[in-house]
Image (cartoon, rainbow, N blue to C red):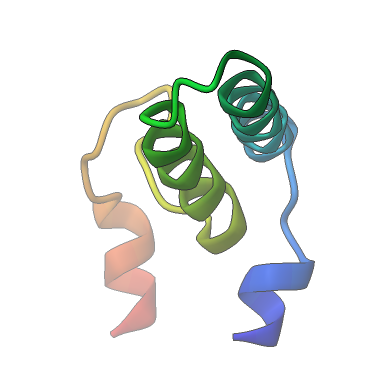
Amino acid sequence: MKNVLLYNWHFMRILRVVIALYLFYNAYVTHEWFFIAFGIFFFLQAVFNLGCGARGCNISYKSAKNEQ
């Protein structure tokens, strides 16, 4: 779990954190509290490195064979 949180930070993870922080700020300023739900969504994706990359949500068969 420590490795997931501390390592492999790339542009998309940082962008998701920035989007989440913007949505939290926007919710606070405009008092439109439904923005918090979207902010939590992006923040959890960034922290736990969830979501699809540029190649989609497919499984890499090359790396799956190497793990067996």
